[in-house]
Length: 189
Ligand code: AMP
Image 1 (spheres, rainbow, N blue to C red):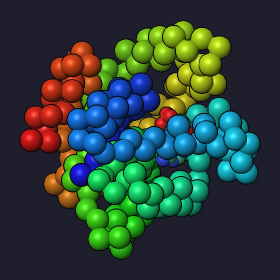
Image 2: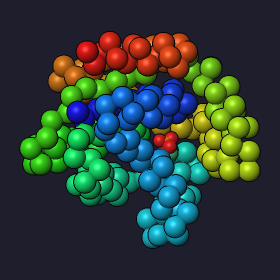
Image 3: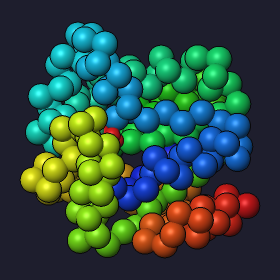
C-alpha cells in the first residue's frame, strides 16, 4: 500500500503515520525527518537545507524528488510506504506520479488532515515544550506562520490535483488521536 499524508504543519500526520506503519507493516517516510538527519550528519544536502528549513521555506523540488526516488528503492519499502511531508508542491506530485509509474507502482490514497489553524499554534508550542532542548528550530510561532503561508501557497494546490485523480480522502484532524486513527481506517477500508 502506498499512501500520502497531507496537511499543514502540526496536523498530526507524523502521529498517524506511526500508527499506520504498525497497522499495515508499511514504512513511514518523513522528508522532514530525512532532512533533519542529513543536517545532523553534516551532509552537503543537510548543510544547504538547514537555513531554508529554519526560515520555514521549502527545499528545492529536485533535491526532494531525488531523495524520495532513492529512498523508495530500499528493501524496507517493498511492502509499501507512507509519504509524510512529500509531495509539497505540484511539481513534486507530478514527479511522484512519474516515478511510481516507471517503477510499476500506484498510489492507493491521499489522506488530507483538515485542522483549525488557530489550534495548530498551540500544538506546535506543546511539541516544542515536550522536546525541550531537542526542540526543532522551526517550531516557533513566527516560523509556523511562514510554514502555514507556504502550505497554502505551494502545497494546498495539490489537494485538487489528487481529488481529480479520485484518490483524496478527507480526515477531521481535530479529533483525538484514536478518533482520527479510526477515521483513517474507515477511509482506507
Ligand atoms: P516537516 O518535518 O514535514 O514539517 O518538514 C520540515 C521542513 O523540511 C519544511 O518546513 C521544509 O523546509 C522541509 N521539507 C520537508 N519536506 C519537504 C518537501 N517535500 N519539499 C520541500 N521541503 C521540505
